[in-house]
Image (cartoon, rainbow, N blue to C red; front, side, top):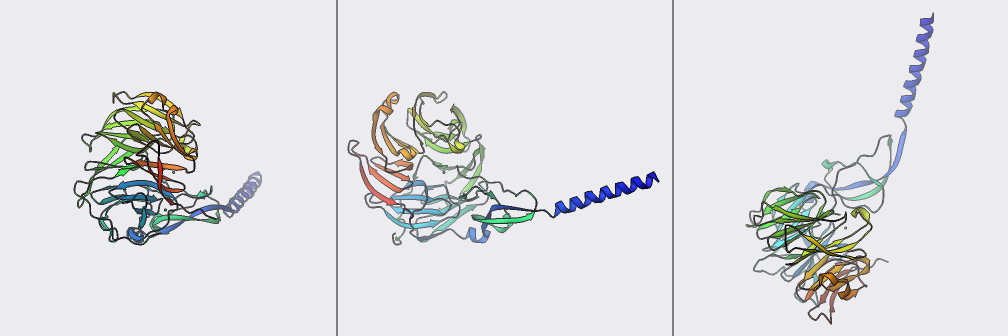
Length: 425
């Protein structure tokens, strides 16, 4: 009898548990997510083309080549600016490149990222682009940014490339939202032209925030926060990938000076010998606190802006001046307080610093121990992101647009031109 009663009790208890689990299975969990908007893989690979000029909206990286300025529109493509007259630049074309962030040019071949791919585009005729080469899956997966704090919804790579987001309310049986691994590169009317004119080749010049850098016949691409992909571009008709080189965690920007490659990283500056560009050799590193930091170099010094806040790290922003007289032992000369610095440029004794909301600052850097005392000019009406000094002409890109200054007379710097980013009502 006791055995029967015990069996009855156990049966009731098990039935209760099963009922409970059954109810749990039916519990609906509601949450809000950023649901992906896809472009098919076929559309993605066919999307690169020249279009009519469009206004700048969110300007990113800048690049100068021959008489042209290329301005990245984040994740959309590249604006082509005819700069044959810096006092009257003309926005002539837009090259649609989905997922584009970085670029570099040599011998009329534009190298650009397109989400995970690297593409080499012949820009000799800007109205008739020719893709010379496409390298699939060179870069880690990149997702466009969101404008809210909702989680990312489930992503199905089989549906194509994610090009945007729409906010959706999801209701389903309880399970944690799924995530897709990604890497995000971390922060301008005119008619058609007759095309980019023929040139004698050569390499262009990038801003200090660049992740693409060309040295002789090698293209270096910083394809994540820890590795370089190396490409042989000696023959534009036969571009080849020549391996991947691990450089360490937190790498952000590239700068070439003489036969050295300088890498700005969140924890310091790394110096590589690139006499053999396909086999970089680490010479030394200069350590600093965790921050976001581009670097530019002249023959004697490296100039590094360290930006605090967000994911960059510390609460302190500054400019470090580093002595390079012995490349094996870079030594801090002095640090100068900054507000919110981004890109920078050096031309002889002139140092140009994009200090975020504090504006563009121009210094006489002839005395590294007294740079802050030799502030020549501040432009507080712009929020600059990066600069390219070209010897008398300074190209500046920022929140408000693309600006050019004539600094041939340092005592009488002149604003030459502006291509503004329209202000939304």
